[in-house]
Amino acid sequence: MQPVRIHNLQKSYGGIQALRGITFDVQEGELFGLIGPDGAGKTTLFRIITTLLKPDSGEASVLGKDVVDEYNAIRSSIGYMPGQFALYQDLSVRENMNFFASVFGTTLEQNYELVAPIYRQLEPFENRLAGALSGGMKQKLALSCALIHKPALLVLDEPTTGVDAVSRKEFWQMLHRLKAKGITILVSTPYMDEAKQCDRIALMQNGGILSIESPSAVTRQFDRQVWSVRAGSKYRLIQFLRGYEHAESVQPFGESIHYIDYRAGFDPADFKQMLERNGFQGVQVQQVAPGIEDVFIRLMEQEETYE
Amino acid sequence: MNELIIEAQNLTRKFGDFTAVDHITFDVGRGEIFGFLGANGAGKTTAMRMLTGLLSPTAGEARVAGYDVASQAEQIKQEIGYMSQKFSLYGDLTVYENIRLYGGIYGLGDEEIRKKSAELVEMLQMEALRDKRVGALPLGWKQKLAFSVALIHEPKIVFMDEPTGGVDPITRRQFWEQIYKVAEEGTTVFVTTHYMDEAEYCDRVSIMVDGRMDALGSPAELKKQFEAEDIEQVFIKLARGADRDEG
Image (tube, rainbow over all chains, first blue to last red; front, side, top):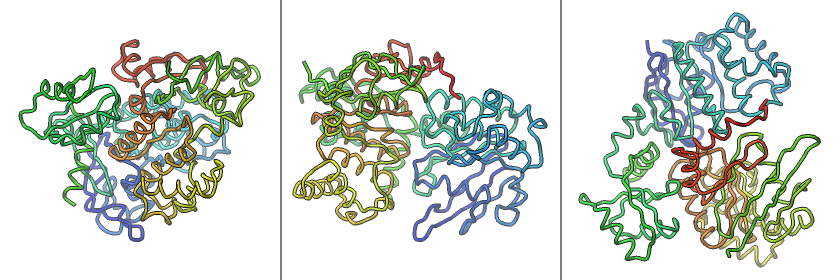
């Protein structure tokens, strides 16, 4: 049984289409990522999956149960961590744990083994109010509360947003450990660099899915050579390349510019000379493997062309 | 020598026994894009508050745009812009009203505000959205508008807090191009972010650990120095060594 099955799901708010017919399945034990910017529809999709919102049309089933007709059965077997910190700020760490455990008819002791790797880091602060915790610690507490009833499916809405790089890395390590225990995980993130942590990713934009693949397959399907170009001022280089007749795509990428050329027989040495003739100094041109962001940009550009 | 917009010498701030910022020394030049990184609790916010004239140092000194942060805080406020993704604009005011409000706050005259508003709306190609509530705009537009508004009084330096979080990769790059443009024109851009690949867009990056500035250099230099593939790895190597109890 696939823990999540979504078929042609649609949802609008007023005149705005938040989900435009989304279809995908999540396999048992999979760590599945939804990657996309704010406004892509990730949260709407998660609210439907967690039975907090009804779809306008289409079907969604979670753990074999329909999200509309059998919502009650779903609620007790999933763990959900919403994007906004949703624990009680005026309760202590321990009180929040006890509260969520009792709501699900269990206790911390009963499921201690599952939450221990995460909760142990919180134990020194058991009596601190949840509202007084740092971002990284709040996130650990929220995950512990979502896990307290041993859910078969974890749904995590942007758990790493606003959290520093070290806490983010630790959080992903925790998710891998939970996956190893057989828990299926559906997670969303706006950070493209987190895609590689997932078994499969769906790239989302404007209420639709651009692609569903494993992270390595996503970048393998990229059918263009990407050149990393450096030459002093990035701003002047971008302006110049945007006006260059053979340029297909010119995008800043950290310290360099990612450049894609229209021509089949692109010659980097000629290209370098051309830049030098136009007054650029210290020119470096290097082929690089395309990343998830290169793919996402290309898929977005293609969508715009089709529409 | 390039004009310095920030000159910090042993800048320090204590709260009781706790040293939030511990003798940091660094310079930022005119037109430079400077990344200011650190884990939660490393002292970034306290340092930023001193540099923007909101908090006095307990030791050391800093000059921003030529003014002393301890004794000339009011002058500093005239010379800086500030943009935070979350708090910069009023969602219930229109695009035009937000521009006029900030123009007024920064002390521009009526005539100047009128001229600037028209220029700004045109530059952002937001003519059609002029009378729309800002709260109803897509995030990417809000960010571009917030950035332009932070520059309305032509500050020497603009401080930005996680400027491009949450937007799609194309909008994000359009935003960086806007940053490159103002930097090329001579405005210094000071960026704090948790987004490590955002740091790679900066000319130089500093990383704070336990109140100290433990790394400072161009992204390429730091990667070489710490034998790391990217800034995220540099950051993790440094922040793992932090003593501060996170709690």
